[in-house]
Every structure is written in C-alpha cells, then in structure tokens.
Length: 247
Image (tube, rainbow, N blue to C red; front, side):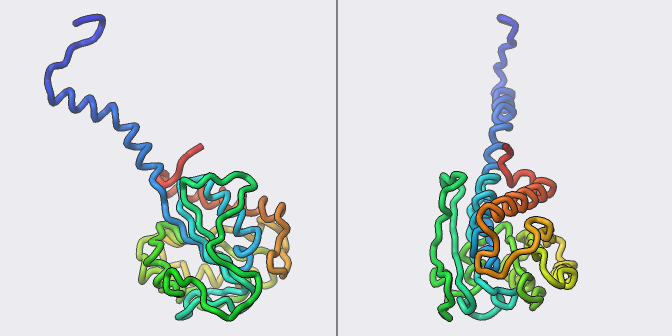
C-alpha cells in the first residue's frame, strides 16, 4: 500500500483494468459510426422541404445521406426498370457525416433539373433502384411517397427487401391532401407485414400544401422538416440508440 493505492503486479489484472477503463470510449466510437441513409421522394423532396430535411438529419446524427427525389413520383416511379425525369424535375443530393453544414449552408446537389427532360437519371448507379441500393447500401431508407397517387407501394417494399432485407424503412406519410385516409391506408397495407418498416406521421407538419414544384416557401418547409427530422431520430432512439450522436 502506498499513498492510498494498491500496486497490482498480476498482468491479467492489469489487462482487465485497461479494458474497463477504455470501455466507455469504445462505446462512444460505436455510437458515432456513420449510418448510410437513402431518401426516396417526390417533388416535396425536390424542393425546400427535402433540402431542409437533409440538413436537419445531418445535424442530428452521424449520417451519410443520399437523397433521390423525382417530381410527380409515386412508388411505381421507383419500381420501374429505369428512373426518369418525366414530370417536373428532380434532385439528387449527397452529404457526408463529416461535412460542415450550417443553418443556411447549401446542400450539395449531385445532379438535378427543375423541368422535365424525359431522360434517365442516376448514371453513376445504372439508373435503377436495384443498382442504387447496391451502390449506397443504406441502413435506413426514408420513403416520402403517396402524395401524388396510391400505386404499387407493396412492389416498392418488395424491391427494397430483395436488395436490403434488414434495412429499416421509415415511410413518411402524405401531407394534408384530399383522400388522406385512403393514401395512408395504402401505405399501411404495404408495410403491415414488415417488422422493420414504420409509418412516420407528416400530415400535421405543414397544413395544406400547394401544387407548385416547391410546395412550401422555405421558412415553412424549414419548420416542417425540422419537426420531421426530430420524429425520425426520436424513433431511432427508441429502437437503435447506438445509431445516433446525442446532443
């Protein structure tokens, strides 16, 4: 005994003490591992709402985020053999977990247009969802579809599961639109047998939206997307606490 401390000479005990001392640090390293997020959406995601949602998710967790948004899209748009800009524009955005993105920083747009071109999109991953899923290998897939029409939601789930059987799917509900109950029921029917798919409520975020390509002015979209990002991350905390950096 010296100065209130016991000298330990057993090498095994020294090794165990080192492990216990480092354990909290190992836990932090695990929690801050970047998670791959893929977002699939329609013109809401093309516009301000999608840009702000990506910004707020970036700020809340250690996420690599790839967003593919196609104006006028439904589930069939993403199930089709080739992804096309047929209606009214598209945006592909990508952010890395270590990017420095402030409150007003622009989100990196990989490619995009605000008018229809009838051309294929996504040349870097062969222009289809199968290749996109193989390329990005998402841990979490955020789907924002169903505002335009109820079509082939089950087909989209099946295509995702053929490539990513264990990834989480968070399906953002339609906004406040006519026939909302039927729109929501169509999504619920498609995901009800999938234990890793959840519906995230969004119809109360922004009130009635317009049919313009950006739908919401930037300030309104910012508020709505911040609330949605919180709902997504709060849900993750309940199911996968180690996925997030807490702040």
